[in-house]
Amino acid sequence: MNDCYQQNITVIRQRWPVLASQLDTMAEKATELTLALAEGAESTLSVNGIQLTSRHNRALEAQQQAAQVQQQPVVTLYGTGLGDLQHELLSRRELNTLKVKILNESLFSLVLQLLDQRSWLSDPRVQLSLAGEDKELQPPYVVLPSELELASDFSQKIRQRLCSELEVGNVSLRLAENTAPLLPRLQQNQCYWQQDKQVQQLFRTMSTGQQAFVIAAGPSLEQHYGLLQQCRTQPVPPLLICVDTAVKALLAHQIVPDIVVTVDYLISARHLPVAELPASCRLVYFPITSAEILADFPGERYVAMNETQMFASLRDQLSAARLFMHGSVIHPAVDLAVQMGAREVLLFGADFAFSHQKTHASWQDGEIGIPYQQASEWVMNAYGEKVPTLPNFMTYLIGLERYIQRHPTITFYNMSKAGAVIEGTHYHPEYCR
Image (cartoon, rainbow, N blue to C red; front, top):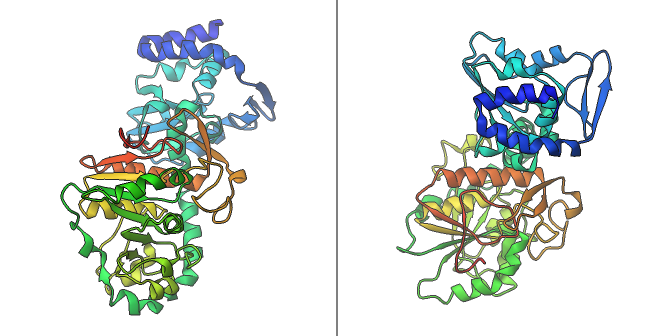
């Protein structure tokens, strides 16, 4: 603990004594970081091969980063860097509060040992805390990109939300490019969505006390076939709402879903074997679903919409209710269960990760979707293990967590401890041990 650290931590101890104690603990772990000096027109620190700031013009870089957030009385900064962005934001007269969120505790302790940070730490407008203590983002905010790469395990939930939000624009652009050629399918399917029942006819139709089983296609589903077979024999059997890519797995074990939900325009009979389903099964679909699926489905069909721009042209022609959507078929499946009246929703196969070194139950790794070996991110499971995943899986997880947060009167159970921890869910005391 050198003099520089003691001077910095004294300010923190005076203002945030609990945080100071946490940082004292982390200070020793800072030695585990690989530190180097990166020199150019100026110089900066490189930590684990990642430059914290520009090595040519730190002040200009801070100005450009600050420009990403408009003049506001309250701004949140994710990451601490070398203090440049804090100084730039604090120079704004309109700023009343700057919330600085530490994304890597050891990294911040290291900087405190090397550089005098007292000028911004002492500013009464600054509020300093650990990013990992928050459940959700606090807009308006600006992010230090280097610290998205260096974020600690404790900050991963917030990091995932930041990465997802920063990618929204690119995702929307790619979605528009991918779906534009398919828009004629909306009119081609008119003979179906104009005549079929609308999804709101299913709302509030569940029996009192009946549970809803929402069955996704994550690998952990393979651990629950026996339970699903057994539950069908109960006096009041649960309602089985199944996503399209899980149908194959269920039918292989003589489990027939009550409702199948499909949303992806790429789903075909290969993914969803409709010919093997009985007429008692119902289909909830979006208007862009393959005509092959709609023509061959043996049971009742119910059309639904969502709030995306894709269906803007149908708003005046189709009054079907909107189901929640955040990139994955699991979202409208869960929303359907809630709209139908479920007070308890049990999630099967909702892994959002390669929990058993593949993407989907009853499918070979890479047969549908990106293979296990290309995982670029990770999520934590209930055993405290890091499970490989993908950025889009993280976005789907975030969407479900936010939906659950908006429905506090519904009890959600996560039936697998092998997949991602889902904030707001419980592990079922009887079925999930």
